[in-house]
Length: 474
Image 1 (tube, rainbow, N blue to C red):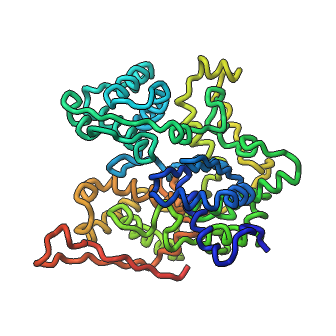
Image 2 (image 1 turned 120 degrees about the vertical axis):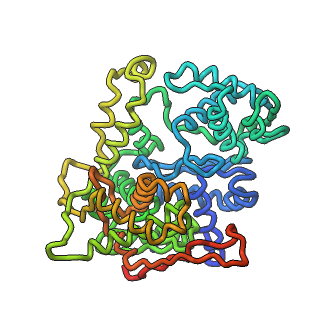
Image 3 (image 1 turned 135 degrees about the vertical axis):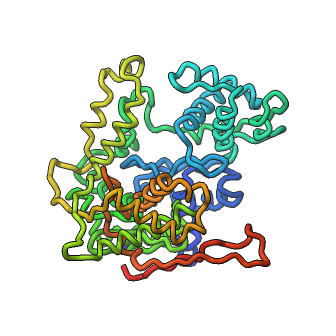
């Protein structure tokens, strides 16, 4: 029997699980973020949360009077949870750079700061970084900077005392904004478990066991493997057995995994022949809803149905099958791209005593890998040209319900739709096309129709797409 939430009565278990989902969904909680009730909910269960999150997942919960900060144990590089702009778009590299420089600049200010003064401080640092810069005379730079400031404002690190950031972004000569600085929240926002100046590869951030001070004995290694397996199921749409090393595979198949995760989160663990998934039908924990609304999500779902239908065919029309990149290969490729931005010479390399930071990423292997070659699994392959053709068919049939800018740019729509399917572990993007992964079979038989506008309703009040139905058969 699971020992998770041992101190929680059956009558209060649902409230406790709500607090668990809250802190997992929002690793930083403040008096106003994500809402005014969240911090009180987490603080009520703080002691039990600290115990269970460490024991089950290896995460550390740090609470103060005004913050609850979850320090996650990281096993991989996840691109599916980006910071978002005021318009809901993912941060680009410029915005991330401005966010980090803003955090540094705020550490040099007192209790308040004017937006223009803060921009000048960030600009002074940005100009020393090749290819960055911050020119407050350029509207795109001002917008990117305000997105970074707004991200901090939403979390309470900054509080608008007077003026308007939007007005400043429009005309800094005529408008200004004044912010109060919350030092406690600011510290919680940036709370690294490593001395960043000593890192020569982003993969050094992924040694979660070392970061949290865990021992390295055999029993501790088994415990860490169990935590890693639970994290894999919790933080991904599905954990495929074919993608796991030998030790992790045993933990994924263990009955205790389902018991612990179900009692911790209140969600259901589903096991299939290909892997394990934590089912969140209500969206209480998921950061991405699928199926979902919007042009990209609708196009992705319809495209998933067509890929799934093609996979069902047999005979001479059967699809070619290819192996998917392993988790370690995907991690190494992402790490190389990130590490390419690190300076190969200078203070970072000197502090670490290394001359070539790239070596850290290419030599990285996932914890538990012992040089064993897993059995190769091959998946149905569809080409880029095939995908473009299917999207063209989808647009011709359902394009009246798509956003005009994406309907007119099919390459961008296809790229975003495939990215969404890959984020949901439905496909794996590879050179020349995509591989259909087992979870994709859930979405075969999808049907949709475009609603016609009612004459008496304004266009803005009439949905163009009906809810999309899917065949519930896995």
